[in-house]
Length: 112
Image (cartoon, rainbow, N blue to C red; front, top):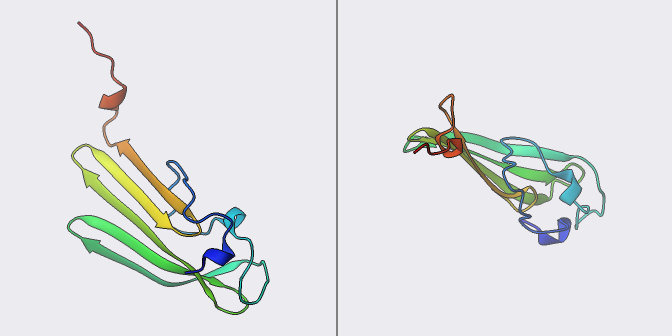
């Protein structure tokens, strides 16, 4: 993984969790070949561990195949919520939780 290829390492992306793709706005160009082009996604794998779905892949420079970053995305269901996380030097870090119920219990107001 190469901190010289990105503008900011692990930028905070709020709730934007990417299962695939690349955050090209954070890519300054390859530190090896000095080109700023699209990236290749390689070594993509999907596995399940303890009910959690984990997707990992590598971001590579299209021209010289330099490894820019390793991307990890997770998805799980906990109680009544879907939980997503992302961690990647290029794409950033993010978390999101979404209710699987028609009405999100976190948005309900208490009535007395």
